[in-house]
Length: 132
Image 1 (cartoon, rainbow, N blue to C red):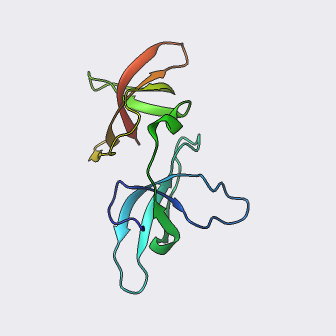
Image 2: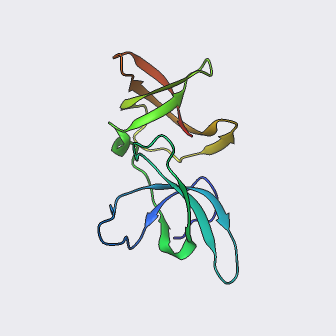
């Protein structure tokens, strides 16, 4: 199924040779054009500080279900209950599966996925996953 709205997680159904077939992308915008429907996407978990937003043909993407346990070990940013943000690696996710709900805020996209990370100093923090 092709993405239909912003905030969905997708991947290319037929990646090019040399591309990671499991690479996930966040859909930032769906452009409903009769001749050439497109989507603005951003690769997740690239390790880059500022991954680029790319425009691709909507027909090249498939929406995927994300098993939350697949995120263990990935480097992410979370919003803590006091609204501070912390960067670290995921060590625990409270729910095995969740219907991902994404909300655009000033500093990124906040999810309803509650998780625990460990920062570079070895301190654990809990909060909502944020994509910025």
